[in-house]
Image (cartoon, rainbow, N blue to C red):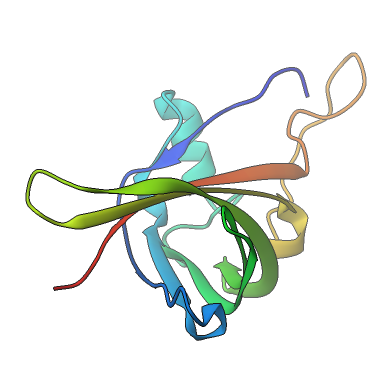
Length: 155
């Protein structure tokens, strides 16, 4: 592995119910359209969409579904979630930092969070790799997932 490759999913939908007085009653769900992945390199993106990685024709969606929400402190939440990739569901934990709240130009109360976790892609059956001539492999097993969340209060 020589460098980090950053990508993002452009097509996703989710909902988040935050119960500030009882975080255990909070829930979060996210569905990502796997084909919306972009890294800025079309050849690499097509390879990532193939059976070597996400197998997007067979598994078009990546899903997060919370199983537990814990308040760490006034600025942090910890979500334990089931993450489904390639039809494999495994638990992950994501720590979120509260970024603040404000009324947006459309009179919606909006809150923001950012979260981050690291997974081993092989735990979800994403096993492809290639040996490098100088030693080592092309693709790391470690994948960092970053989530930027902006949510509005339902009226």
